Amino acid sequence: MARVFSGASLRDTRLLAGLSAAELAASVGRSPWAVLKYETGAVQPPILIADALAEALGVPLESLLVNDSLAVAVA
Image 1 (cartoon, rainbow, N blue to C red):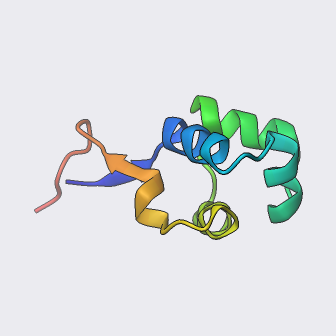
Image 2 (cartoon, rainbow, N blue to C red; image 1 turned 90 degrees about the horizontal axis):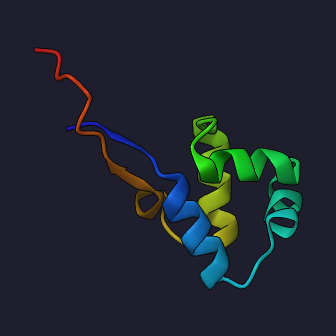
């Protein structure tokens, strides 16, 4: 099953870390609006940014991913 970035996981992890969207955005070189769009699922971050977000939050990238039940396996 494919794994996709989870905006909800990003938001929850950011809040648990006690960071504002602006603080997290500054640490990865993005705007606060970009972080909010990632959190709401309006935009999927590029893999390098997703990895930077995880690193800034001190968590493995896997913790920001969820199973995509809509993904179709290619044989």
